[in-house]
Length: 242
Image (cartoon, rainbow, N blue to C red; front, top):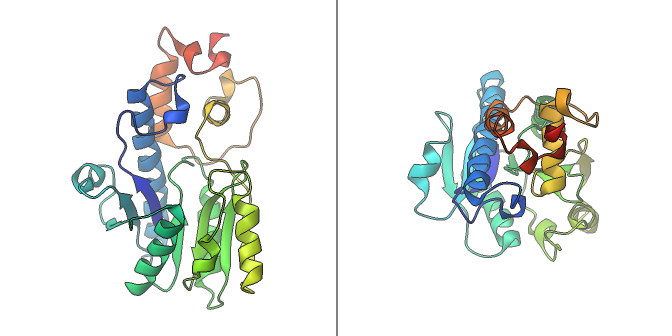
């Protein structure tokens, strides 16, 4: 279970969450996302000891600071250089070359991803069929991609950071006759709209909307709770003002 991640650093992490969050807060919430996601992976590993959690990280030299965020037993492998296509394809190839029978590439921006989605993902990839398991995001991307074999075509000519990523990836799987299994959609947190969605999920008693509930994300919730109990709670969430 590999998590694509970059070291959370002030001014470089989750910049689209500003100005709701300061640059420092954006880096801190990124750390919370990583802690919650890796904790979920660790819980899955406790159910199935044949799984291994891997941090697929960038940049080189950030190993020490990232290791402090990872549960015991997590492995680390550096991302290859290049654009996102090269990094995702390279991570798949590197992990399969290391001897894993299947590889899941998870984003690090979906801290409340329902745990049973991960369980279903693992179950589907244990079957010996060559297939792609993909979890679409509500913004048109995907939060996870699982494979048993490397298929570089899945990552070629994808319009990253657009609402066409999932659709184009499905089209690539059709081109190479690779069966695709789609998990339920979820969301990643990368702008004010998705931050509002996260707040409504974690603090339903203060929300103006009812949203589906996923995993509890305790690190993220505690971080946001501290902001919401301060004098400038409405800075990050209009619902907090009422």
